[in-house]
Length: 422
Image (cartoon, rainbow, N blue to C red):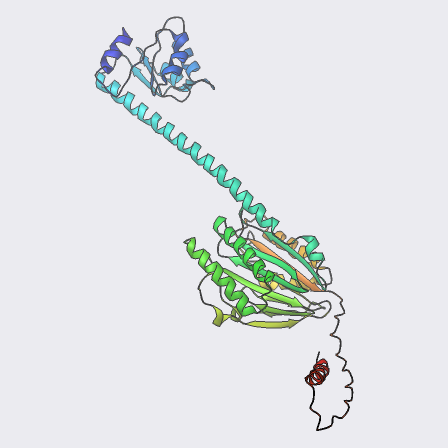
């Protein structure tokens, strides 16, 4: 009778489809087949106590666990209501209610459940997308580490000890450093893309590729080098509709001399006894990718290194790192740690700085990428260019004036003279 009464109440409502099950043992099977958005359950039923069915409908693996459940009862008893709600009922109606009230409650709970399903579907799509992006970011992160100079490459460089460290703040970093060794010339680059994350990481990889390409074609002029690099990255950044740029310094080393060009953080020069010299690079270049034409801003300076001297390069993630007391690490502390540990190898100096920095940061979250490069001049005898020995000029036999000089003899004389300047 109750089922028929409810069916007749809902029959005119075109947005509501009514399914009826009189056997509580088959309720779950019927619910699974019709996938309801609301369940009306009478507490009075054959073969099973009503609250027991509520427990079954709300079981861990039941298909109806989250479907809104409205309990119909003839009893207006608070204790029964409390038990029904404790078992997972969403609503409680004393039967039979007015049609308007019943329809309103059904629509209210149905709409809430449909919205829940939509939200769950959107979350599932978002999780799948996040998983896909996480895999792509992990691939880019691995690629960034794969293109860093290897220990074998660094050990093969004559005259220098070099040690590097890079740790991104996110999965993908925006810091760049590389060490290239071509024809006896060592090129060290270090830079910092604005921000960090995927977009910055892509620009970092672009920078590494462009720098390596310019070195492979033997471009040694600092102005032409940075100009070509800037134009390449500037056009790519515009294609990406990005506002990214990077600070970048390029060091070119050969036989105890280092040429520094490009705008970045200060270059720290450390002498053999630990004495510090700080080179400001603001007047040596311009941010890369910010403007198409930067040749007027490019300059360079040359530093001479003796045995035991060296250089420390870094990105702003080191001096601007914070501890739990909101204090910055600072450039002065970086210089002090480098100076105090300068008697060690480049690797030991690098590790001492990293350990001191990590101890300073403590449990504070790292907000920026951290990159550090230490290079140190070895004991090395540079071979001087061999002096050119002049060959004695053979005395030519006098030629009588009346006899014309043969062209062959003239050519031979010219060849002898040319050999003086070989």
